[in-house]
Length: 452
Image (cartoon, rainbow, N blue to C red):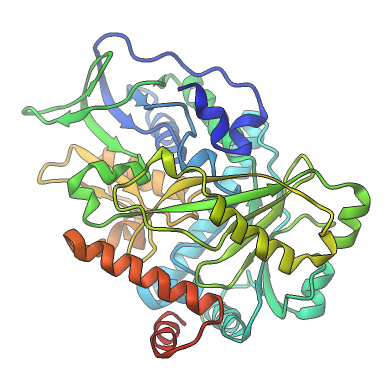
């Protein structure tokens, strides 16, 4: 347990006192398994909807130990791979409703952080999405056309020089800018959510792994080393760690995402990149890079390789020198003017993906007592707030327009079983990496046509 501080820069930045583990049995209305964004937002939404609901959150390590405390800290409107992809998969009406819901969600997150006094270094500098090559130019164009088709005004085209006025690198060809996006310290946000939940009467137990769920008759029992939690309903909010649940594993695959950060830059070094507005940046690779300034003056650089983890999350995969070196290669390629800036550290973390790149919330099994919410494909900081509202409505068994959004209305796509799953996922990743790295061929061309 003592190693949780080493799992990311964010988890090590500030002192934190974990909540004590469960010690003895407990009876509640709702038990939530997982103390990350989804679990904590759902607990808060439940209490705000009905303060009388008794809620307990069980976290196997510490709040934010998984993806919630290891990501890049981008809260974006993205659902699916991009806006063009969302329209293609969900249809124009649902795509527009989803996009508007996400824009509202980001405003709600910012207001909540302000009103609750959460010190999460939250800023609203916007998101610059850029192209580094001809195929990426086309993806920029497709997103802009999708935005216009939906009657939205949230994406603004930027030429190469306009992009470079925000971030100085000759590698950018063009891009689009979105003002709604937020940047946060994700671990600080998770911990702030934990405290906000506790203030509402939620009981949070850390260092409390759930060994299994039982459904004897008219209730759910979460079994832990410290005692059983008996509840009317349960939420599985463990994201990649849901690999342990066979009924969810058929829709879910685990990949390992990676991030490196530089040492803090001097004022003169920052002038070389001209990043005065502090915008978050993501490119249009199929397996994208993302980068941003950190509150302590570093550059965070993540993405590129995301190897498939067939056995689910494994702490032994939380460091990958080879992947860190490949990230540093693209950092140096993008910012050759920062050749005197050292990469300080790197970390990895498990990410839950689905075939259609949508998060999903729904009910598990024949009964209506177990709800799940997971599968953010590496973009969960913003969508987890919205998906948690869907989970709230499912747990309270009430109708809502949110249940018509694709995260609830579209059925997850099952993955191939057994060894075939690994062959498909590993093979797809190799093809996509070759496409991103400019290694052509007929298979690569076919993949690009499918994914454009």
